[in-house]
Length: 303
Image (cartoon, rainbow, N blue to C red; front, side, top):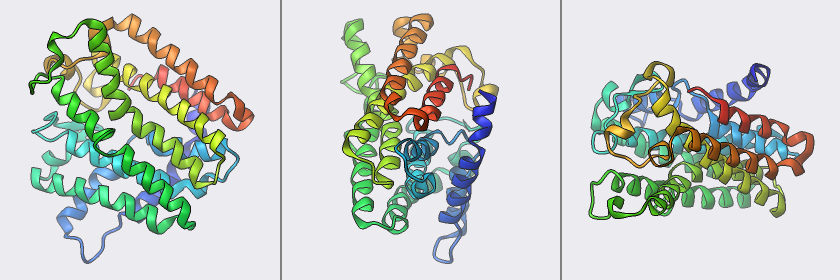
């Protein structure tokens, strides 16, 4: 696994360089806002979603470098969502990626504006950095849906409801109904952005509809596994290891996979999801092997 992670360094370096270029300071953006944008966007992280975009482009036989604008757009949406999720009105977190959250480092108003700016910047990058207009249009269409009311934002709204904030809290549901509700949250809040990262990577290099469907299937299975593992790590790991507060889900009364199924059964479910993800990309042959290895990494990760 160490060899595989080392092989991703050129991809990660290219992503970080492009993110820095796309978010470079300009005279029209207030300095404090620019600092907050770059503080959150360029924070050290796994870069899982943009890496998936590049590996997807490679898996379908394209040049991964052609997918860099798409990869960065996905990471910008992800960064904006983390800024807003961390706000006091949402999850009220003080730590993200081992550093103070954006609203703690700056202030709440600046954090909200930084998130707003990153969301707009994602679509600016797709519209201006992808050379083929039809590809740019399709990438904008898919990312806007994945980041919107029916997917990412809707999933966050239901996640808040699952804490018991609203009348729609699932307290009276059976265990099976609660599990279905939880899956519905995370297929949108987590899974949608992982899936669209893969789709944009394939679209950026002009992949066929059949291959795009395989990437979608892989992403949906991987996204669910990622969230199940994340829930388990919130129980098993430490804040130092994770770079963010742990144990918060149970303290907030959130629905989680370990809370409903126990850690061991949750881990078994994640493994089944990973097996489904791997099966989806076997048709890519050698080109799809990095996606297979990355899926195993998601299952085995410790932070």
